[in-house]
Length: 331
Image 1 (cartoon, rainbow, N blue to C red):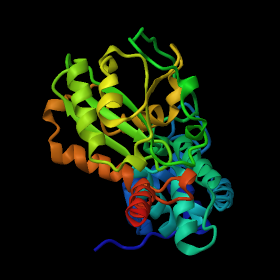
Image 2 (spheres, rainbow, N blue to C red):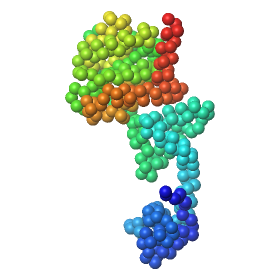
Image 3 (tube, helix red, strand yellow):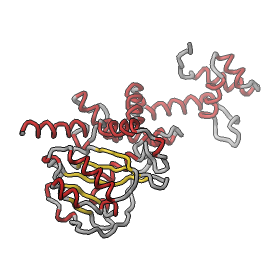
């Protein structure tokens, strides 16, 4: 069993200074003070005066002042003062949740604000500055926020522009308006079909044997035919040729289809954001053939069980289930 750690005292730091001047090794100093050699090494590195050789000048009183100042600096962070909360936040980040999702869910569960998302962000950047790279736990592992670029489009027969889509789809208050896209991988011919419901943010993913339009249309028909008519009001695509047989959805299911303007994927920003989030567990270099259907289902379930700020920190599964139950009661 290891012993609990206590901060070095001023007396111990002065003894380190004296013993180092006498030429004692770090291990011998640690034995004399009842400390590990690692503790002594870290202390000299951290609080010694900066020189070309880290084993240079060490002043015990100066080192104690630096340590006290650092503890006061650390005390600014709530996550530093509350290790249990810090552990909870780190676990949430490791699960793929954003600081806003973590803070919002805590507030929902406790009925009050436990910590703000900005406090979490500040602590993340603070830890990264100390070479403990917490920003790599963020959903997109970025230390700064930025926007994705654009991509091209193509002409598709009988396409309806997104400007003709019902206005109710824009405010995300009416369920049943969907977006679809393909998520591609580095290996040739590897794709998954992704659909995303705009109001609940519900996500579904299905692997594809090929990118052919006929196969994509068949999968979409199968997927949407299982849903009540009230929760399939429209479907929006980009201009990829894989959606060229979109009319089958309208003819067989009465599901209107619409297309973004060329070079404007942001017009279906919900699914673009969702795919960006899924790129963390499924980066482009992934060999999707090595991913089992069970593992893929688990990743989707984790996404749909993640609380979202835009849903008042409810999960997509919770919100979409409410839609389905409401439709069942009405019928």
